[in-house]
Image (cartoon, rainbow, N blue to C red):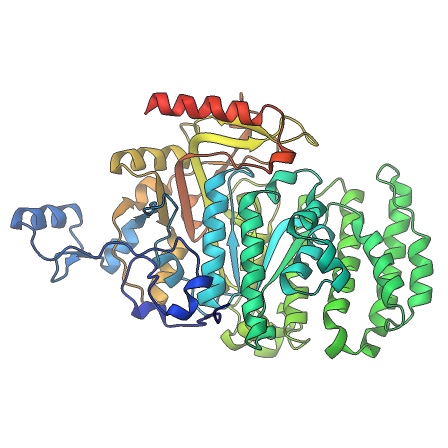
Length: 556
């Protein structure tokens, strides 16, 4: 295998190309995302004088460079949003404008990748593409997905090569993905996720062959909507009791816990018991050889935290705030272990630095504690403070506590097409025609602009994203733009979860101020349904998909 090539903390603002340049070094071509292609260079100055005058009339405050390309002024950036097309390459695979990555500064410790549905093919393709680039060129160290920690952990062990020899021989990637068979199984049991896991495995293998194990990338679940951590903890203590302090006592206490979804009294008792057991674990943690067993201790620690949060969550009618607070606590736990305990939490860091908790993270501290990518729904990662949500979310929490400059958020939306979802919970994934986004929505606004420009996919920089481009001194030369006045008005945003009420599109809408919702909005005008693994599909998925494709072909 060729040596892995990884460039971290490069001064990306020095590169003036608008799209990712794939020609860097023959040694790393194998490990690069396949679809990061270079856009055509600006045309030379062969325009007619009338063409230049027309361009200046459209953007009266802009300047024109020597090659006739529009250069945006500060005033233009305050009144317009820059928009770049996301197009397909010669192999009909999506590529991403490089300016998205140029805007992500070295001080960013979290990139949040959203989605307006849990079943859109293009969202998964683009998030996978962005993830690979951030790992290769920005030094990101971990991926967290909207799945329960114990259901994903063995896949992480597979990726980093930490499975026991017997398990490694016995389980291939398809067998390990069976750990994620519970509803909604299509979200992380699909070909895009499978390919990403294989890519991560290959990437880490190259790092290991080059004696760079400390740089290996991990893959974790951040959620806590099951009690599986109890079974995992019992198994871990049974297997490693010789290295874990108080193991006999903890094993006895764990065996006595009875979790029942339907009896709140038992759950409340269990919550108190788990809290006491966790305190017992923490009291003996300093006795463990962390150099040798750090990952084991991290897994036990996170499983205890996940179990406590799950019980608390079900004891409080599945509160959204409890869930996203756990997500933030999981991020903090990751940073703490990634930095070998040197990172003690945002409150400690703010106190030591004499800064408010909302200020941006110190750049040196960011890299010592790792950098993570989160895949989750828009309703989790967007800025809840500018929506009509009755709850907070992880997007608002990390911005409040790490600072705006330490977080980069990418939301996704679509106007129409198809989507994978279910009518009711715990059903096999079905193929649905996706209703047009409602007239009062931002999706309708983007749809009208995309039709006008004859584009299907748009990369739209919003207020904070523009500020981050400016701070990185990125050259802003967009293909299209839209007036801030058109976007400033509050409109509806689409929120489709695992269940889809396709006859009532307003049931999947919330109100928001788009300008401050995220740093970037990626819009897909007509999208495709995410294809689940064949064994997971509803019996009608393929036939409905074929009928939809035939209809699209007739329309075209």
